[in-house]
Length: 477
Image 1 (cartoon, helix red, strand yellow):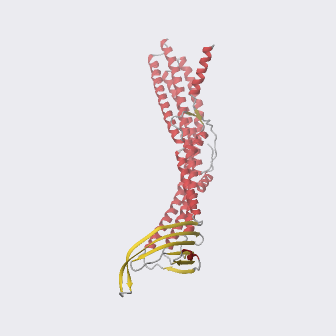
Image 2: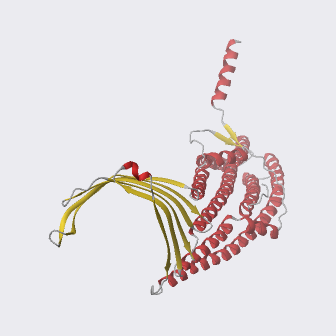
Image 3: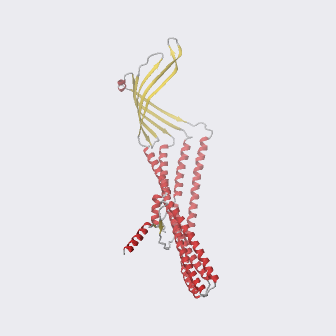
């Protein structure tokens, strides 16, 4: 009794040691959407665009900057008038300045201008060969406006570009998810197909083994010729070789599948699927409409048209008359006593309107505008071509679905017929009314019927998954 318990415990331990994970399609897709290289790469690209948009928006807020010159030193020869000689002479002069500057800058996105509050203070120690110069101090605070006129609003355009690029990245991420789901689905069914092929070939080996054993017994009894027994022995060897190849292919596909969904190569797993034929009715016009409304590359190309239009306007504005208003109002004070620079301020006012009129650039700007317009027209042409290509793709995949559907319906019946034919042929072989070659042919037909039926069903499932990917609409699988 103790020996039996020990054996049972050992068997349980062995079973648990060799237990492996069984993955369904949904589980494999879930793992891939978290762990795969492709989805992580798309996620980092999305994060980059998100941060760029955040940076563009934060750039429209008030920024505060501080600068320090600690110190700023200069020493040089300069020509100065010497009143004692009445001539210009060179003297060694210089200064050492310690200065701090505090700047508040607020972009004005609606007008493309900037408004600033600037404060500065310095201490200056000057020296000259002619005379002793006392240390002096300076303080200044001013409000400054810089406002371009009659020109392109670069601030608004940069914000628009960041928002459009963010939308493109979001669509690209969604597309990457769809692509990953399809790739995992295709690889999963390919792996499952290889697994079922192993099972089909194993069944073939068992059938040929049974026929071989029957032929050997009949040969020993003198009921069949030796050549028939030898033929079945050859068929058995070929079936076993086919099984070894099928098992090797299955293991190779498992390793590829691990890399695709992000599993460690050392992890053991199996796949399980419930393949059922559920015919889906596809409306071609609706499928094309879904694709044209949702396909990432088409929406991104439309976004590129808007971006290129902005670029045309920006380049064109460089050749137009533009103006710049700069205005400043502030108070400042200079004194040899530090505390005196904070009282009895002087006013500092200035305003300027600067006009820039392009006179001659030898046609450079017009060529740049033509180049930008050519890029815009190319993008529009790509948009039209993409629409045509997408419509062509949808028609092709719908035709593929209908073809696979017809194959499934026909081949599913052929499996039952081939199975019945094989059973009848096996009974006839045992009765001695047909040869081993006839039995081998029926067995081969049964294997081919099973394989073809499985392939047709998987082709149908993959075609549906491909349609879901290319229309961005769920048609099931």
